[in-house]
Amino acid sequence: MNPFDAWEKQQREKCTFEIEDKIVDFFSESVFDGDNFDEFESELPNKSVVKSTLEMLQEERKTLPIYPFWEELLQAVSGYPVLAIVGETGSGKTTQIPQYLYEPRWVAAMSVAARVSQEMGVKLGHEVGYSIRFEDCTSDKTVLKYMTDCMLLREIVIEPSLESYSVLIVDEAQERTLSTDNLFGLLKDLINYRPDLKLLISSATLDAEKFSDYFGSAPIFKIPGRRYPVELFYTKAPEVDYIEAAIVTALQIHVNEPTGDILVFLTGQDEIERAEEILKQRTRGLGTKIAELIICPIYANLPTELQAKIFEPTPERARKVVLATNIAETSLTIDGIKYVIHPGFAKVKSYNPKTGMESLLVNPISKASANQRTGLSERTGPGKCFRLYTLHNYHRIWMTILCQKYNELIWKMLSLFSNVLVNFDFIDPPLEEALLKAFELLYALGALNKAGQLTRVGRQMAEFPIDPKLSKTIVSLDKYKCSDEIITIAAMLFVGNSIFYRPKDKQIYADNARMNFHLGDVGDRIALLRVYNCWRECNYSTEWCRENYIQVSSMKRARDIRDQLEGLFARVEIDTSIYSNL
Image (cartoon, rainbow, N blue to C red):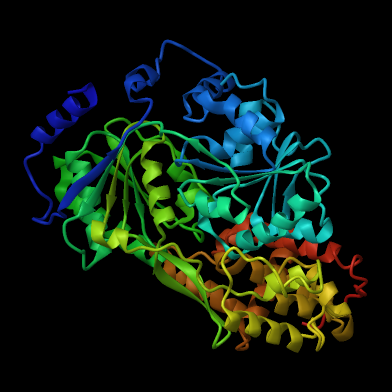
């Protein structure tokens, strides 16, 4: 028996009570072996040795499963125009491969770009940068650039040949978004046009075979192993209330398992707040019988200063439980997580082509997402993942792309080639009904003519990286002489529901503050305009935001978006004369 198992058994023997007579029964289905388990104890921090951050990062790079294979990887990249890469979550695909390609000899050891800039010892935004919608942190010095699939599509619109790039890496390809799938179709043609361009498709699952077939039997480079072993558990029977099951499982882990923080996936703010309240009640009831349990929620609408608490080190003799939405699946790296609990659901946007409406629905996650969540438990040592569903249900999960809005995608693609959709090589063909709805909307907005080609208005609209309806509103500004108001509303709408903050202990005050912006029975859009104008009149005051229960980080983002929208006016030849009427 290894030291880790022995210590675990000892801790189990100490526990002699259950939590309110509730228990969730699991069985261990499998153990995913790890390559670094024998070195686990030797990797624990030695307080007598003081090392620089850069030295520690370089040493950590050597522990990644991809490290022993970097030379073979570079040989494969040089030999083929397209390469599919398969590796477990945490194997180093995202952070290491770009560095190997940039400087093959240098393999000594908030975001991925920030991490890579740390490892390379450079400033974020210089040699290493990123580009997301309405935010570009790059410079003339940038050689490694991380961006979203939507931004790469936009770059293809501006520069169809992508001459600025020598290597493209499509990471997390198993997530299969609509934008990513259509990127594949465009890149497939581009590879034939530019034989010097290298395309790497990185996936955490064996779905890479599908990508390989799509790109004409492109070779698959497999990164074997994972850093540490993970034990996987399924429930013996379906759970009726997965929130209650998640709470009970978290408490079972806290009482019976060795040290290590817990990550619980839930579908939204309401579920997280409910789970947080119940956990606080039950841990208070147990008093000193158990160690301190620090509860940290994380969801999009949570103020930035509260989100930061999940990254704070856990005190000795305490355990942290993070209650998170799927934002923690790929967007965040939380150190210290040893246990992952997830019910197999997530709240995602789904588009109904019959009604033309988009809804936020709770749907089962894909197998790729389930495996991604499992890998989060072994970032710093051996871990365990508790799936709140049966093994039978897991095998019934199928990877699907939810029905999504095609409006923006179609008009971006038509701005490239007028007939691009006629014989477009989709990796998975979209629903015909959804495509027809998208064409109907774009035609109604004046973006397409009767032949299905982009009009002058459509090309103007395509310059704005926002929803087609908002784009049409913006390009109509010079007609209605209200540019200041419209771009403000558009920027605030883009930020979405994260403007107002409603703390549980001050909900009445927050609601009253919000209603002040609706005086005169005005609608939500005019209320958002009033919020921004008041903030601007108060010289963009942080204190004003606190007093009105408004998130200052969201307001700053809205201001940045507004500035960028205004900066696009000259490109589309819009008269920016400002007539304020409100």
